[in-house]
Amino acid sequence: MVEQFPFKEAVAGSIPAGPTPNSAGSSNGRTADFGSAYRGSNPCPAADSTRYARSRLSAQLRIVLSDRREPKDLFLMPYFVYILRTSANTLYIGQTNNLSRRLKEHQSKSSKSAKYLQYFDFAALAYSEKYSTRKEAMQRETQLKKWTKKKKEALIKNF
Image (cartoon, rainbow, N blue to C red; front, side, top):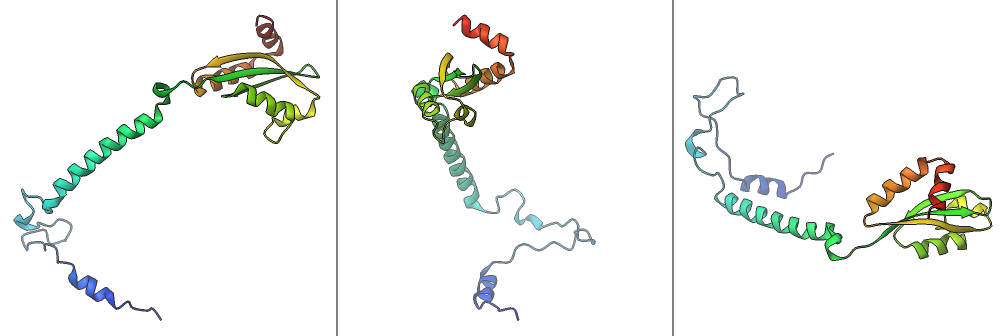
């Protein structure tokens, strides 16, 4: 049995009825002429002021969000791409925004360390580059990872 809510009738009865189609409209009910009540006037006079307030609020919100998205103007956080040489003479490439902290994590073999490096006795910094955005650092990291070991060794040698 479906339970009826007692306030349903009260709420439904308090909603004003909308306009009804004129008899001059189409007989199939697909198009309806709602009369002159809505022609040339706003059906809700408060809608214009509400739209205006929303657009102003939206503009203010965009300004606040744009300030939050652009930390470049506030301060520059450097990002690093680095190459580590392991005890087995293999190379590991990574990127971070705090190079000294990341090196300590790798050396301590903590859970934040790269799993690959946990298999080696040690890993020493062989090369690093500094970038102003994370996007640039990630793109460079991807580029270096695609290089052959010979090309990476040449880069390190010239460092």
